[in-house]
Figure (cartoon, one colour):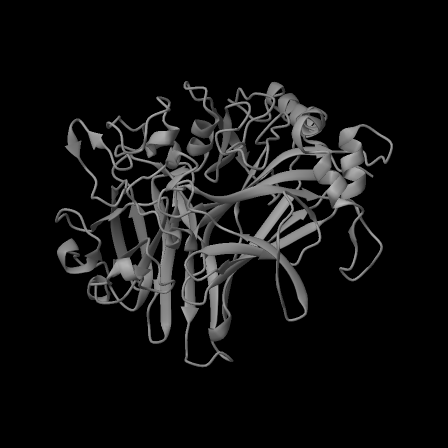
Length: 503
């Protein structure tokens, strides 16, 4: 029996609005929203890491009886430049599992999963009897490659690919799996797993699936795809196997992202978080959950709707650095690149190293650019902005903090103020405040980190609020990761908790 289709739910929403059930809302039939039940069309995983023995494992589950075609894209953490992406075909009720790994100089992904991908993933050496496929990440999006100059002054080495974040975007679905049907139905038939149990089944014919997506045939197939549905579930875990540490987390899940198929070739930058259609967002407040608001950006850009949806003024979470404990906050701004990175400006076509142009609100400093003739960036291709911290111990004590004594990197001399410069950021608690972040420090040995020294913490444990200035909001997702490293892999452990937010 079919699950409820999104169009049915959208009609029910429209009827509810018309009947006054969602008082004060004038919503389109569909608008992107943060999934309330954990199922959606877009999964934003705020962090992966392959440094210092860390790996990042994840699963994507198709909870429906439709075939799903999704784009999987890893973005390096500094400026969200594309590190690698390709298309994955999930047959009904299928799971795709994969992970990231260090390749020495850079990073890459690996999988032992049988689901079809387009293109086909190259074979890797087997591990523990498991047959693996995978592909290395690339620096082509921030280096000189293929006759294009994509440099952003953030460095051109593969080391940048060792940490960042990744996204899964559902591009279309197929509700019929017919061996003699049209191109899309044939694709679904050949992607279906057959011939085994206990994870031994394999797709009928992945080569045929890829043939139906390739070239002019693929254009025909794409036009036959149905709209994406809210049927994807994701989960991930950060693992440091040698130390016996793992911390699982869930992605930010967006529902009702697109009302039509948004398929594109595996080497295309599309779809992305600007592909929301229509360009509108339904924002549900915990303070008033029965009266959501609808945001329709004047720009007409889908990314502006997504940004508004995840915009927050304050990020709230706990910290613990007592004894063998370490804490880091992950702060990822998954739409920031559409506002500060020159190749993505509306005035597209300029070299990243060309003349400066103004960034787009809500950000005010471009990557490696100038604002009103003043260079607000260091030579490393950063786009920085101020953040303010308030910290308490577990018994309400809030110390007076002087940034000069405690935050790294720091900007100015304002009380409680530090700076974040990347698309994905790690805020490490503890240490002496003198971390050489270029060499990697803190829990994740991260090179996209800021550090808050033990000297300015109110105690070994407590909680904090990070804000972006009075009345200011920025589009942010993330979580806290805490580990207990007791020097014995048998008793070490870790965990992750989502941030709380104030709009």
